[in-house]
Length: 596
Image (cartoon, rainbow, N blue to C red; front, side, top):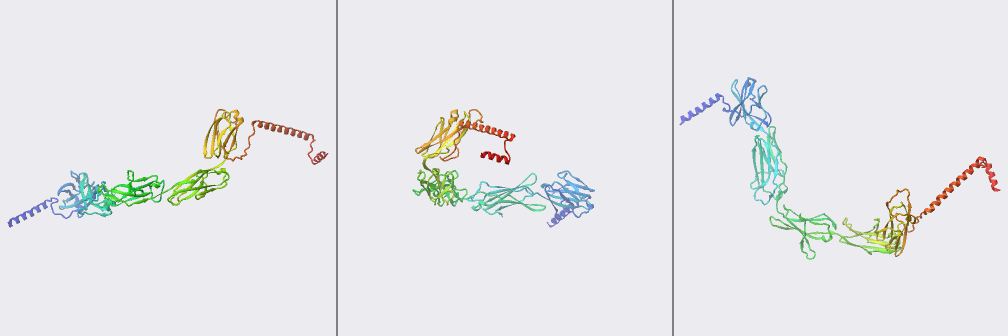
């Protein structure tokens, strides 16, 4: 037995010596290969050992070793290189005077050992380990949009991270709120896999699974890819994502918008809120003041109670009920009181005030509110502030002081909360005309709208002295406007028009003179004549002369001009004959003659 072992050892040693003498590449025991690193798409520069001199490269063979099998890929003979048929045939070239073999267009498939073997002056070989790198694309992350329940008994998928086209396979690290996550039994599980593309690059897919709690509802998750390049270590991060987390509500409460003091007329929204996700089914109830029982209110599709416009009747106690449809747990909010501030029932006494001209009148304003009220009195016609306080005193009334007065009741503590009441003061008096007389330029056959306005208390009625179509419009409770549609005829031009306003206390008139306008075009047309600015009943507008008096005036002016012309001619005649004294002596003579 011992002899046979010795024989076997001798034969093995002899075999190794023979193989080493035959120069079979890759079989002899070699030192660690030289490391060459290059990125995909780049060019690898393979040197056949730094210890060789220039003379050593006249006869070199290059091999690629794949699965421990060397394959001849390039020959160098007397400094000239020649590629061998195969996958490297068109990508190899000599550089640096034949000392370097350049391999272009590097792919992941090129990651292997390359071997150069020199024949002269003795058989030598040099091994090179080629390492290939490719940075992956920016990682994409897809969150679980369905969401995760905190009641889940095992880790659920949070997100998936994908890093495409990297080499070698990058390392993935998951983060939550900036802190790295590690495998944790029944809590955190990271499952990664990779796919080799036809290009030789890797696509990495990593799935993060975790058991989440309520506090994770706002947690930010992201993944990080770590990879190496010839320049060193690098990393890329995905965007941050938040996964929906479902958890039961523990509390419900009411929220009212707008916040602050509410007033009648506001749009008010009452909604229920809860600290659960998804929120429970809500209902809102209001306390019945009579029975003290809570009665459910009608809400919109979103469970919101909308009060528009808000009224004082909406004031009261409200509460919210929440029903968790998953756990069938019912929750109730604290009761909340809603107060709608109001001003209502603004009244003025007397409601229909009337007084004699020259008398005094007292107006009193009243209103109701849940807050302190301030009163103001305004003149309706001008908006002028007359008095602060609920009482307005009017002394020595004139008929012009008749008309509208407005009481404003407001609440200073609630901006915008006010109500008003308008009252019309009637001052007894005969009709008062806007104007007494008016001139209107017209064209014969023109259709006119003549207007006449009067006021008084009791309210006057208006009549016309000419035929036409009349209509009336109330300007206010004591004023009336009458419009007469009439055709201009010679008779109307001669007589003019007169409107008469009358009530139980008297009557008054307005006279309208029609003046023919010869500059206007002929033909039938329509025009409207509006009343002038108001004037009192003592108007002194002059009445126009009749058409006949105008002719007399023209004749008189013509005669005067002729007399002056004759007188001028006589004076000129005496001056030429010397009969007209012009000096001082002549003036004295004229004085003497005058005295005689």
